[in-house]
Image 1 (cartoon, helix red, strand yellow):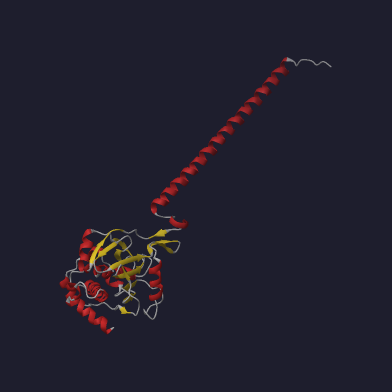
Image 2: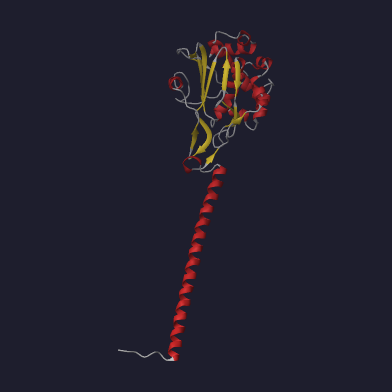
Length: 311
């Protein structure tokens, strides 16, 4: 069956309809392309924002560890002036202070000698976050300074979340000590950075030191609860558990002020720190056989030794 060609008007109308359909299709294609471009741009923007957020979080110290917030100050190298002041307290000052206001007396224990290569060993166990450790480190640095030489002592503070917050102090993490008379091992088990409610692990006790800590940091050798810090074993002859004086003595003082105060026998800080240092020195002298003589026969050390004998 044959058909008739559309009239002129019908043909024109058909061409107009086809043109309109093509224009609509072109508009839809342009709209779809714009939508895709906008989606892609939005996705790129989100990625950029996320990356920037991660950079900011990392730079601010947030999100370390298992995705939790962190607080705490990182340790740094102690200043040369602080090291000079704390490791060279004038002997005349130490003699004048005697035991000062130190409250805790090293306790004599019946235990095998703690030695390394024939020399008595002083084992210190603490943690950077601990305010009582912060207080005790000062005399623990002063006393061995009379027997040998320190290097790489760090500067840090106790935790801001604990009692006596931000007590300025030194740290034995990364430090070393050399002496003809005695060996020193300082272990800071955790730092002062709080991550998800816990302080970050730092140093680890050796198996032998862990055994000493587990055995003698408990009654009847100490008066505190098992595992208390700071803990100090002096050659297997004496132990200290807890701080020798209150950290409150150091409150509000910078590290530089604390170190400088140690030379003034009338200063409350010197009375506490130097007094505790003399007691620790007297205990070290006992396990070294009173060597060196110039240290162990010093008037301040002899006063401290008499107090040890009465404890």
